[in-house]
Length: 372
Image 1: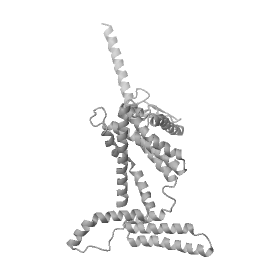
Image 2: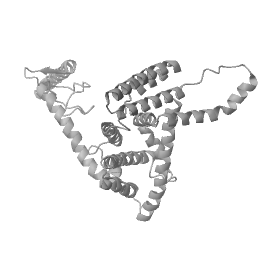
Image 3: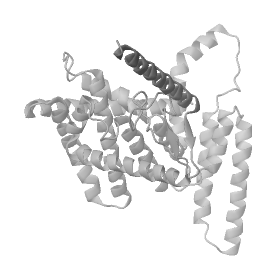
Image 4: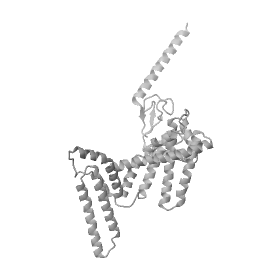
């Protein structure tokens, strides 16, 4: 019987220890951690969600257990973030260039920590492409500031008179400069080019204004005639806008294409789905990953071809044009485990689908720009 009191004492001691541990955990959860003089912390629970830590990372939210609050730690995180992305980039890019099907399939199957996600890569390539395009001068070296001012007036509801006064002032000033240059015997070629562009810009902005001089007559027959001719007038107005200043049109197309480039993904996915309409193995998610990776690489090829066109390097223009369909073939065959014949005929059909998607995208862009 003497063993019973001893056992009771051990149980009591264990209970006290358990209560102390619970109290310590509660205190840790309440206070999170203590910060030492050197900026390091001693964590007993996750500083993000408050879960008691049992390892180097929180098993509830995944945050690292140990954090430190020093400038050196911040710089370390900065360098690590850059190199971590760079490491992913250099693991993703070779596969994207030569084995795109393998990259797509591995990402879909769950191997994602090693690669850049499709949407992140897509946004990166779009940003780089338009940054390089703008750095190269865009669609021309003309002065767009006056055109932008006039465009802003149209968007804010400015009248034709306001626009005319703004542009006509610049036209008159340019003409005075031309006269002064001729009197001094200097060349006026550049000034005359500026004058021609200003006149085109004025005509474009005036054409963009809705006609308000005619008003409404209240005549029912006139309203019917206007309704019948509205489509033709709208198309004629669009044509006048494009003809008046094509540089401004291309500039607006560039801006809108950058903002709405993501539309290429939903426009392209249905064409990939049509290649496997009755398949239960491949879902819309698979097609979306496939399309996003493919568009990202095609954007890179467009950048390379643009550089070749800018510097008159024929190889940089021809090589991307030849490699693009081959890349599409390899993507299809690897991502969907197709035979050579199955990949070839699907590549032909998907190429036609890509052209259709680009045409639809261009129509949307023209509609937004010319109707705005």
